[in-house]
Image (cartoon, rainbow, N blue to C red; front, side):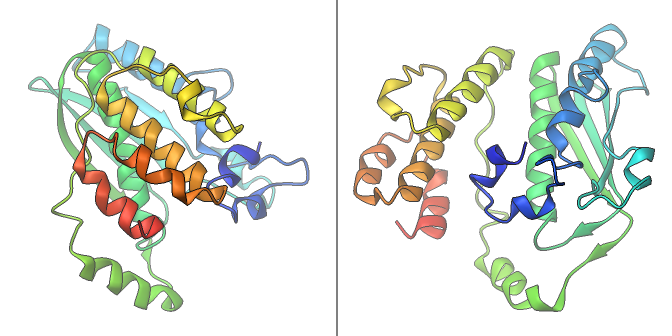
Length: 240
């Protein structure tokens, strides 16, 4: 359904069909594509046969072109390899907007890579992003140049995910996100995990406070963040 994403991206409903479903949504394709959890399938394959060349997650499907859906996935597939004790990943995109899509896609898919690496107990390897059509709309050129001129892209890194198996923390994180999106207070969640996960929950809580017009409560949550790298996000996103 469209509601969970439209909470964060207000324009998302324009991609929904008349039944309120976004046909090309990635979540169901990653975790329940025709009843198959592709992420867990890849993990299972690589645990049994680390040198497998079959660890592929399919996103784009032949049925996506059968009717004129409002949203068709830009991502064709993700492939994962364990080589020399490291997990390498390749993403192939049929189309990618260099400003509105590329930065977010690389972030999202390398996070999937990190989740799978932690699940396998191997280190992160290389990430390769391949694109059939890379494009920039003229209306976004000024914004794109401002984004590049910020200069933070190569200086601020996402904190490393804890080394242990991530799935218990991921399940609790998803539950916390649902509660926060539903209006729950951060203090009511009783969310105790590694600082990495606690910080992500705090970021979601800050987003919710800003959305509700409760900016005065944000400094208290901000002061609990353990990683200073989130400061640039809070400053640029919320002007805090």
